[in-house]
Image 1 (cartoon, rainbow, N blue to C red):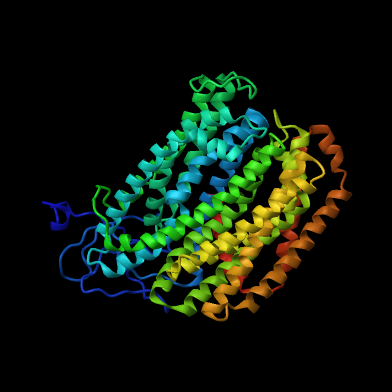
Image 2 (tube, rainbow, N blue to C red):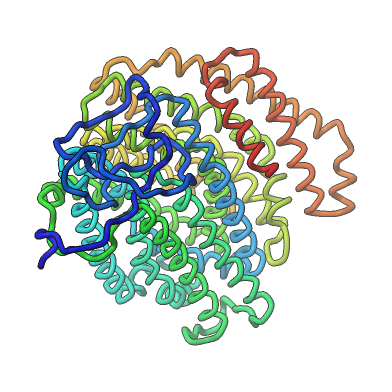
Length: 611
């Protein structure tokens, strides 16, 4: 008996967030169907509540668990903040462990080997993004919403077919990429200062990650739409822990890698780093399986393409074009950096990772929580609700990220010295990293805004406009990057200009996105956003200036001269506290609505950390 005929299976347990008895809030999304699909967790409620067996809401055939199903979404802003808070601790842990991982890469391997390793380790992400990455995953959200609203089984078969097609596509991409490893490293590095043979050896061992990244991305989309955020938020932590253990083992038993020596793929140090790092990605995907099973998602393959996936082909082409264009920008950055200095790629990658720490805690969490609501509102054509989501996401991004940008801009060299000037990463490289961070920190805001705008277009099932936006961003970024070596006073300073060029490109994209959305949606509550921006920027600048004044007045040079880089950690920490406290005091007088939304989350996080 085939799947369409309905093979006999035991009744699956369905998630019950414990909220079905509550009165629905105004504006909640309910899509009635003749037969109720399996209920799922509220998309904006904590997902750690117990799972209980339930019976169908109405008489009729018992439906299987695991579909996206018709659900009542709590569409209030407070619900978004609750979900954001529930993921923030996991994202904080993810960014901290990722940060420790990068510190170990730089200090244990040294800038030259780290550049080769990071180039190879970036390739699986590049290929996965090109074939089936976060862009296509975001584009799947409206499809999941339609399957939930249109299918009698709540989208069970759709999800099974989607997972099967994803696994097959990721497997093919992995085989092709491994076969083309030398070509990929040559494309990224060119004839520069980084050891291409060493990068190729690492690539052979790291490119199998593509399969697991691809499957992970779609499993994550399914869990997120079902309101189950926490397993996906913690999964990268497990990846980082495995990678950290690998690097620690390498430091203890490894004999090191000479970037100038002949490369042997089967040498113990290269195998240890390559296999151990890939194992981390395997673990990252595997930890989602229990959550999918608890949600009732059927993981058994189901072959055949759903008609909606076939229709999605043209839209998927837009997503592929988006990723391809963005990867062109990254390749150009790598090639220009590699031609300038052997440490440039490692420094640029570390700078970007530093920016991803606050963005991951604030931007990614917010985007993950708000994305299902955007998908529902966009598919249903609720323009006012979509505008409300844009305004909320933009204002919260400004509110959370501007103080951090001010701190990073003022104390970039202090941060880099305190965190990275150890082992094989010397003071000169730490200073360049700090200047790169100071000049490029502003990128966080336009980057966060563009990714929010992208999700809005996808929620309205407009897939080509974000591709046009990323084309404009990449053209600006590449043109400015090509000019950087011509104006840089030293070759080692090229990486600073690359960070600046990247940020200017994202500013162009954010402005273009705002103009396009305003034309299509009307007013975007620009006055509210401008008011938040002015208050938050002003308070952040004052906070950073006060911190700089305190840093200059106190005799902190005595401390850093006595204890070295560890003293800079204390110095940066003190500056961060002063910046945030002064900024918070000023903003507390602003009466911005974001204060009401953020305060409960902060109290909740403090409570979680105390426990």
